[in-house]
Image (cartoon, rainbow, N blue to C red):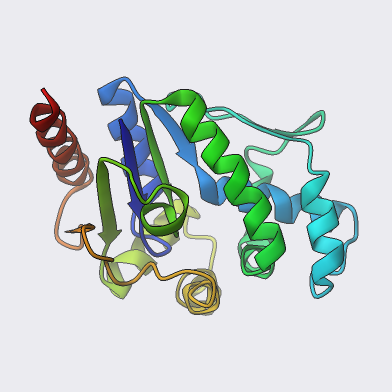
Length: 220
């Protein structure tokens, strides 16, 4: 079974999906981390992010390894453990330039599909999982929240180190840029909406799990 979850920045996709995968005993794929790792690599290689062909070449040779264990996420690029580095604000402000590169995106989508096919029972989250990467997933959910809730959560995630303008760039402005490559603000046909604005973290996790259990019951 494939559980596909999309949504905007700060909606809680990563933490909610990781917790749900852990409770379900499923694998977990953070596709956003793949774009972040690609961005980190491009910056390390001093690739001009405005040069689409150069970015494509860098992504094609990207020596990326991403774990699918929801309880122990490790992301490496070559010999470098970038699990923490890709969460830096400098990556957050540049990742859209890689994520909206059509050729680089196509390469990473192919990798994501390969991981999903290999794992079989997996919770995969990102921007276009329900519509492009895994449109045939048995469970498809758009996880969203109000702009106020998303800014508050991202601020807490960053440990209160970002000012209001920096948070706006990393959340709302990034969503605007990324929406050029995928639609993650409106649910496509057959995709359920889960609005977590007024839900606790555990309530959101439980809601996602209940949808999975319902789908599992329908298959038996």
